[in-house]
Amino acid sequence: MARGADRDDHDDQDDQDDQDDRDDRDDRGGPDAGAGRRGNPALTSRAAILAVVVCAIALSLAYPVREYIAQRKEIADLRHKEALARRQVDELARRKQQLGDKSYIEREATRRLHYCRPDVKCYIVLDGSGGEGRQARRGGPPSRPPWYETLWRSVEAADRPR
Image (cartoon, rainbow, N blue to C red):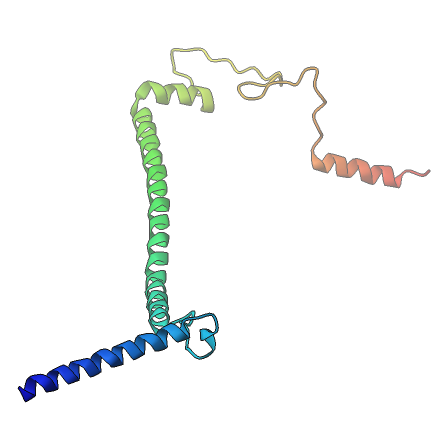
């Protein structure tokens, strides 16, 4: 029985110690308790470690994300260039087909080079009224003389006595 009594005494001692600890906490928990007790700091060691880990992750991801964005922009630029090149290829293919047509070649030779077929009479009018793409200006401002003519007139005007 001595063992059972010892256990009871030991348990009673533990209960008393627990009660004393609670009383001490209650005494310190009052309005004047902040002076004697260390409060929770704003930045704990766990929070500091978490901040360092988050910063490390952000820094380790910054360069790959920047490269990813740059590559996506480059891909978009290359797709745009490819579309332009495809349009140009289509235009050149159309032009090649046009130049393969004999009637188109004859029309262009007649229009641009003034070639005539042997069985056709061709006339070229040289009155200066202009042909395709050169329309005479009517009712508009007079055309400007060439630069050398303007220069020569200014030299003549400078030679005249006043």
